[in-house]
Image (cartoon, rainbow, N blue to C red; front, top):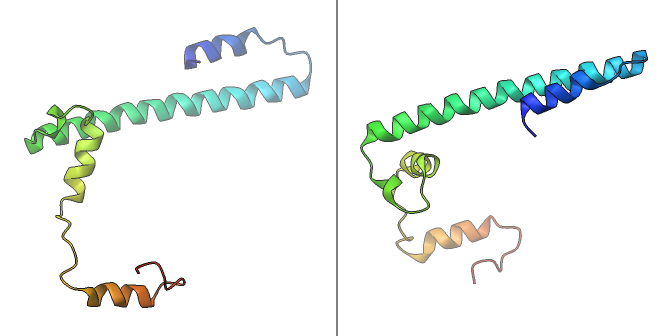
Length: 103
């Protein structure tokens, strides 16, 4: 359902008592909130697209990676490397509530 359709449906409601009037007012406020959030999402997506384009990355050329996914990958930006030896793994295991997690 779109915001316009919701507004048109709310206009058609026959307000016969105070309870109905309050319900329509609350529904109208909710629809207004949805419209405001949709506008914010459009603005955010435009800003993300502009930032990804400014970065010069080719991530968006990969099938399935859009501007949001590319921005996420660019934001993470660090390389994940395996642990050099087992000592850090043992230190991590010591802080686990279940000690059998890492072997």
